[in-house]
View 1 (cartoon, rainbow, N blue to C red):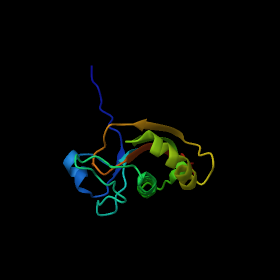
View 2 (spheres, one colour; view 1 turned 60 degrees about the vertical axis):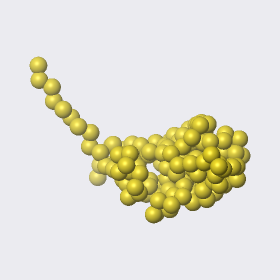
View 3 (cartoon, one colour; view 1 turned 180 degrees about the horizontal axis):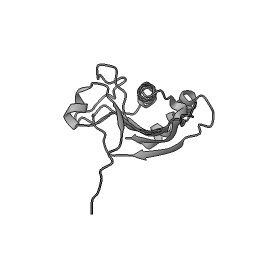
Length: 155
């Protein structure tokens, strides 16, 4: 019996931030019309956190007052990353928000999500999951998603 390998044709995108090499992953992978986006966070082009949480003596966030600012910055990064594939937030079909404080995230999410998706009822399946920690101590939120491009029509 002979088996043939049919490797997936993948396109990948990176930010060029240090943790991509340290951990070893792509920020996003496109296979066909599907785009799978790794958890995005609130960093600038140099990898510096935007609106980092103030930390206590144990290295834990003192409060969650920067949740909204972090969420906005994270969605901006998500939109920019999707743009590398010719997609926008309109192509997102599912998202998962990983947060340190569910109440703070829920309070910010309605306003932020409605603004970034441009509608009072975004057509996106959404999960909000509370976690005990994220990759960086001053990080309050991480967002992963799946987006779908429109199939190209034959000419």
